[in-house]
Image (tube, rainbow, N blue to C red; front, side):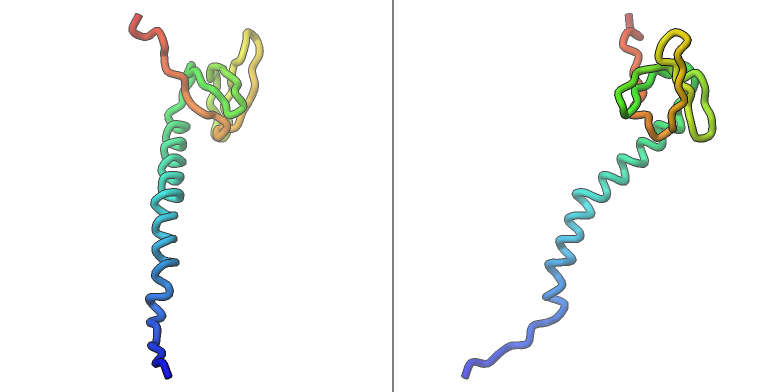
Amino acid sequence: MPQQTAVNPIMQLLPIVLIFIVFYFLLIRPQKLKEKEHQKMLGAIDKNDDVVTLGGIHGTIVGVKEKTFLLRIDENVKIEIERNSIAYVKKAQNAGK
């Protein structure tokens, strides 16, 4: 009769732990770093910054409030948007010319 060997319970959990570690370093950690960078960018936005919203609207910040921005998108056209709806701040394209 073949003899059965007892399997260490820690060895059974090892693959699950390794999968979690891989997911953390490939998915969770980079997303947290990206979110931290986005919050830092939002904190640095000031008046007269050219921005693009998550919806693709281009405009200039004309007012800064605690939770919102006032965005000028055309002559005499202003909208109030949430802080988190800013995708990025546009860089000055002709700064060196």
